[in-house]
Image 1: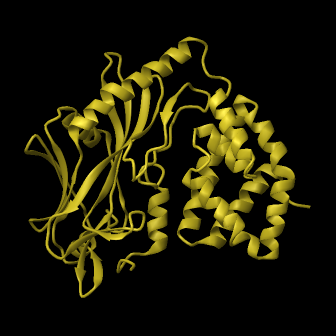
Image 2: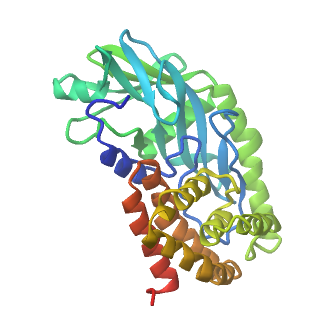
Image 3: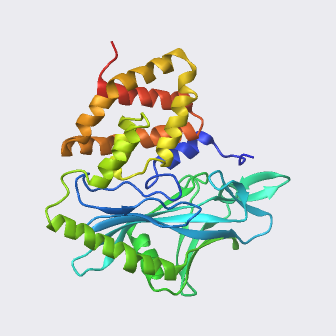
Length: 354
């Protein structure tokens, strides 16, 4: 079942403009160069509930998963990624942090990715935020820490899109949220409309603080040590091995782009694009011609790019400019748009076809 009033194209554009990867367990785009030393863990997903992160010497980004549940009657959560209609699900709190000179981590930006909270009436689903805005009812989120309300954000009609599943937060709000969770005294983000609490995100603050202190900070220390010992101008042995393994899957440029950022062979981006290649794209002559050219010319280009720092920086840019958007378009069923983007990447890298 699709949400009423939920426009697929708007969902797609909102997802692509969000803090980072739309996968709920994904990390956001990093601002560091491809050659900066980093320590990462990227195997977290909805099943193991592990926190994905990428840590540099002074900055880091991570996605902390938290429980979300409905608290009002005739209300459900809706998430395609989590199976459709649910009463209890998973939200992701994505943060970018920086270590100051005194060694304290401070949040620079964040985003909350959550299932849409919807009213279920006569078998149809209606966005709580959208309905409240349409009826002129105040709607927003309230942050609570240690049993006390510490802040709120009002979703203004015409400003906040009720159909988006991602809320971007500025540095001030991000800092308040991070500091509250570090106190280990409980924290929640509640969706409230007209005085009724419809859903609540409840991260485990003990687990959050333990992750920061026992995993993220040591990872940042390790990245700093690696830089002090000579830097990371060359692709790591682990990343190179990952790239070579993925080359065996005949994905060439996409594999190289994903290997540079540290994603494994079965990451959702590669899996999605492989299915696209073997399915829709190979079903017609023009698509098969593009695939043939890709196989013929891409391996040499991929090898050239992956062998130099400048080339790896370009691969990192390609990941965000082409790979992620293409995979998102495929997931949304926009195959023709994905094909156009796929061809644009080939023209940018291989030149016009002759």
